[in-house]
Structure formats: C-alpha cells, structure tokens
Amino acid sequence: MGSDPQYAKYPDLSLAQDIFTLTNPSSTDPLRQTALKKLQNAITEHKMAPLYRHLAHPTEGLLNASGEGSAHKPPTISSRKLNGTAKIIASNKVALSVQFPWDEQLYEKLKAENDSELETFRKEEEEAAEKAGDTEVLAAQGKKAEFWARVGDKEQATQAYEAVFEKTGVLGTKIDLVLAIIRIGIFFNDKPMVKKQVDRAKTLVESGGDWDRRNRLKAYQGLHLLTVRSYTLAAPLLLDSLSTFTSYELCSYSSLVVYSVLAGSVSLKRVDFKSKVVDAPEIRAILGDGEDKLAALTGAFSAGPGAGDEEMQDASSATPRPASTAVNLTALGASGGNQVEAEVPVDFSPLAGLVRSLYVGNYRSFFLALAAVEENFLCLDRYLYEHRGWFVREMRLRGYQQLLQSYRIVGLKSMATDFGVSVDFLDRDLAKFIAADRIPCTIDRVNGIIETNRPDDKNKQYSDVVKQGDQLITKLQKYGQAVRLRGSERG
Image 1 (cartoon, rainbow, N blue to C red):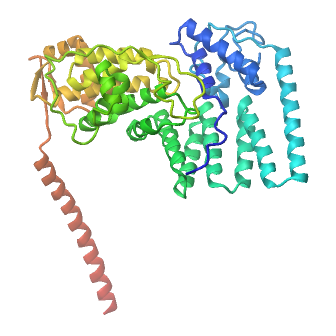
Image 2: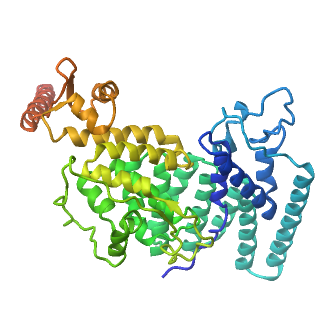
Image 3: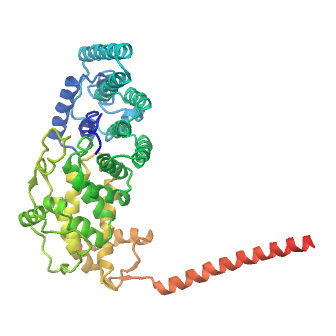
C-alpha cells in the first residue's frame, strides 16, 4: 500500500474554470457574477498576487476590462496577450460584461504578504540545513513549491517542484510532484507541457508506482486526451476511473461522469457503448430513473460482455424514459479522501436523454438531446468548449451511420422526419460526410432516396491480395536481379 498523496491541494483548478467563465460568450451574467465573486475571494484569501496581476493589471492583465490604461478603446481583451497565461481565457474577441477592477493597494498588500511568507520559508530552509537533515530541508522546499502553486505563478511553481523532484528519492513523492506539475499545466492550458509530464508520470508509475497513484494517473491522462480531442483514447481511461476515482484535486466526480459519457458516446462501438456506458452501473446510478438507480446501486445491473443488444427497440416504437433530475454526487464520491467541498447538484437529464435516444434509435429525441448537451455542458466547460463543434458534428454522423447501416435504400423525406429536420438540411449535412468518405452512400434528390453503398468485403480482400502480391513479386524480381549481378561479378 502506498503513502497518502502529497502536493495535491494546489493549484485550485476550479479557479481556472471561473476565469474561463468570465470570458466565455456562452456564459450568462449570473454565472459570470458568481465566478467573479469566487475568483476575487480566492485571490484575497490565498494572497494570489501573481495571478491577480496576470488577470487584472491595467496594462498587462488579461481581464483589464475596467478600461484603465486604454481609455480610448472598448473594454476587450487585447490580441497581443494571446500567449502564456492567455490560454486560460475562453475568447479574446468578446467584451467583458463583468468588470474585474485593478486595486493597486490590494496588489501591494498581497505582494508584501507573499514576500513575508517567502522570507519565512527561506529562514525555515536555512535552519533545517543547519540543524536538521535532508528530510526537513525537502519539507521546507516543498512548502515553498506549494506556495507558488497556490498564488498562481506558473514558472516559479514549476521550477520549485522540479527542484524538490531532483532531491527526493521516494518514488511515490516523485509521482505526486509530477502530478502537481501536470495540474499547473492544466490550469494554464499548456497542452505540450501536460503531455510531456503525463509521459513522465507514466514512466515513473510503470517503474513501481502503487495502486492508488496508478488510478490517479489514469484520470489525469484521460482528461489530457480529452482536451486534445483524442476521445477514442480518453474514453476507456475515463470510464475505468469511475469506479476508483479519488483525484478530486483534478475535477469533481460529476465532471468525470460527464467527460466519460461524452467520450464513450462519440468513440465506442455499439456493443462497447452498451456495456460500458448504457449498462455501466456507475453511470446508470446517475443517469437512470429511480428504478435504474436503485438497481445499479444494489448491483442488479451487469456491464459485462454478456450484456447484448436483445433489448433493442424499434425506432418507431421507442419512447424515451423520464428525464432524471439534478443529482448531488457528494455522497456517491464520498469514498475519496481528497474531496473537501460538496458538489453542486447537476442536472444530468440532457446527458441521459442523449445516451438513451442514441441507443434505442429515437433520432428526433437524439437531436434534441444533443442540442441540450451542447448548451448545458459543451459550451460551459473549459475542457469541452474548444471541441464543441467537432463533437456535435461527430454525434450527428454517428446517428446517420446508425440508421443507414440497417437499410439499403432510405427515403430522404422519411429520414428527415425521423431526425426532425428539413430535407434541405439533411441533404446538405449528409453531402459533407459523403464527400469526406465518412458515409458510404449516394443521394438521389430527383427520386428522393438515399442509397447505401456497402463495400464487398470479399472483393476488397481479393483486390488487396492481388495488389500486395504484385508488389511482393516486383521486390523479389529486383532482389533476384541484384543477386545474379553480384554472382557474375564474382565469376
């Protein structure tokens, strides 16, 4: 059994979501006001002078919408700031409706308190070096690293954690330090940095990491893959993390459920989608109705390979189940010791509708649920926002593919009615996927039909054998000529 995780408190990734909310054009004014209040309180409470300067400074800050230092310009985010910490904002083209004023006196006060705290750490480290051993020195340096992570200084925090990493010899502590650096990269949305550190953590874990840290890294890696749009690779990691999740410093359990369901819905094959998402006890306990939740929590449902498609209903007779209401996941995630604050109740009904309607083939409800998921989840989450257009497009494609693979010929008007869209929209949307070779079919607009073109597997295999065989014969002939030439030279 490994030791308890260290360096897991800072940085607070929920603050990065608040910064994103302030600059997100899809956020409502109440959401922005709430995020602003939380951010201001955190800056004051944790004495976050560096982050405050990055965000609110009149000439250098990312959110200096008060107009100070730029009296003749509208309060927008300058495009010259789109580097470094600017990656944590949602958009540089949207004027902020919530003011984030710069208070010089507050900044000087916070900076003075930071300097005083750093001086205390310096004296503690010097005293430990003189009177104690290496363990005490490392403890003092670790406090200093956590201080920089707490106040929001990316460069200083990374350097401090690296310094502690170089001097510690305990594998578990090394992994915890790398995970802390990963969270710094996630906070500032530095994807190359996160990728490098995730690979580094994987190497450390494979060299002898304990069970808990292996599971924690699984969630970290899954979230990183989600942010770089590798949903196919992220889905199994996130879904596996549901039953053993303890990384509350990374995200809330409700967020993990959302990420897992979305990644699985867009990337898994139908059989895996049923076993790992539709019938998964952890997901069914949250997305299902009252009976489903009770059955999932008592273990009545199984998400094993025996869960087949025998309960599949016909699309015309399928009716969506009652929408689930808001769920508070604090109790469900109570097994993790890192969770401090109770989670805000989340309305999972759009997500539940998406999963159920896709599986049973109720495509009209599926499109409506997809729109609700985009509005309630994709547009409001900092990890999902960047890829919201791609996700919606891929889910539409999945719906089209699922319907068309069951038929040789489908009426264009009939299919448009099934999806609840106009014939013109369906024609234009399908044309894009057909042109990109994503759907093997043709549209006959004159006769109003869609004809699928299923590839003949046997003919394709025969063509591949002939092609590869011809290439092999050509290589053998060249090799034979070279061998004969060398033989004649020897003669």
